[in-house]
Length: 191
Image (tube, rainbow, N blue to C red; front, side, top):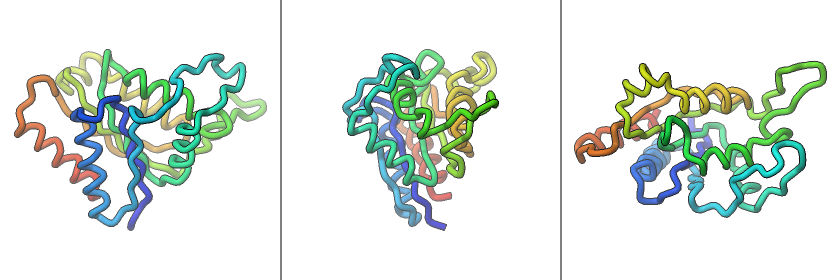
């Protein structure tokens, strides 16, 4: 069954391995009959700093309004990003802070500590690169960046994370390893 898929590239560089993963995923998903859009955060014009927190409204730039419309349109979100310093890059974090706002992504309810999840009904996959071996990131560091995205960001808004693929270490990886990783991303997109 065809889906509306939004691929969100959270790496600021357009010549990164993350960019290659995003493009390969998008092409394979399109070939499988899905309607796919790509949102490259490095191409957007916006202030990534939520200046007043939630104390005062910060007007959304046109690129962020368009991003919210794309998220609303999508049934499935594929997030492609690197792990830097154990977490998501500043650009991606700033995007999340500015876009996943109360009234769009969640709404607090009277007399409840738990919000209404306004993006419920959507699913997500994560394609994540790192220079740390993925097994080390999992067992020694306990995957803080992945927990942040899956549990405290996406699940908080009602988005169900389905599959997470980790690729690494990127630093010093061979062409053969990278082609294997790209093939894994294409396989995920087809299913």
